[in-house]
Image (cartoon, rainbow, N blue to C red; front, side, top):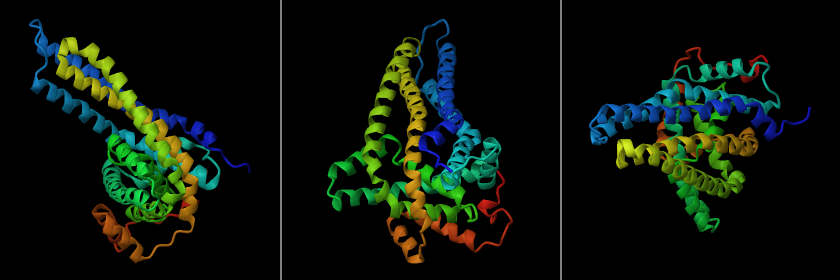
Amino acid sequence: MEKLSQSQIFNKTMKYTLLRMAVPIVSAILSLIIIKIITGIVAGDSGNKMGLISTLIWFILTFGIHFGLNFFIGYKFRAGQMAIIADAVSFNMFPDDMGAYAKESTEYRFPSGNEYLSYRTAVMKSIRQLQMELNTFAENKLRVPVLGQLIRFAQFIIGHALSYTYDLILCYTFVRDGKTLFTSAADAIAVYWDSWRRIATNVMFIAIEIIVGMGVGIAFVGVIVATIISPASGPFAGGLCGLAVGYFIAKAAKVLIDTRLTLKTLEAYFEEAQYADYSSEEYEDMCRYSKAYTKLYRKALDEAFAPPAGGYGNDYESYEY
């Protein structure tokens, strides 16, 4: 069987990419609707502009809605896509019913938004802290100071974490579904710790693409929205709304970047994972660099010694296609 190409996998899972992009886009649209409503209520016939309290209400509603969309449905789109991508890269095939497979895999690993949020928070904090150590290595050992600086700036722009790295770990979590949730997460981060050199050739590309793409996107969309909104709501509220909408649009665009980079690096990451076999000393070595990873590793140990609950332990190859 001919090996599936990155473009084939990307095109085949485009439905999920578009669904993931829809979450920030819907957030942006609702944000505009909310500010128009609040502006109408505040201004009325008197022509007053939005004040600090009304702007704060808009801000809370906007990002509350965005969080709610991600908490209830957004994570399912992302996790479902990574489950399919992990399967395609690992076994060079797609499930017959990708929708059913994505739903089953996601519900199996993350029965609710709470489980996913706990997993995501633990993983992202661990990545953030460990990445700082890798950045230092890139500067001191590889003697490429610009590389480390670009990585740091890129991480600042996108929330102090390379989110495509999180997608690699999420893919590993689905492949290793015979392990408990935090055990697979601890192993996945350890694989990244060991394999980052193999995928480091993409880091410069990541930094430049994210910095330029998101920076231009936020500025361009933000200025347009602020220009339209400011006359009615006031320059402060209009400018803030412009930044928020620009941020949401950039988040939507970044989904494409993250998906492409995940596909570009996942095969090398899985090859490293295939031969990974870590001792407790190696886990403890990572714990020295990250308090967040220490907490995650302890959760993994708690899972390992917990009484069987029947929710885990199924072998990945037992799924029917």
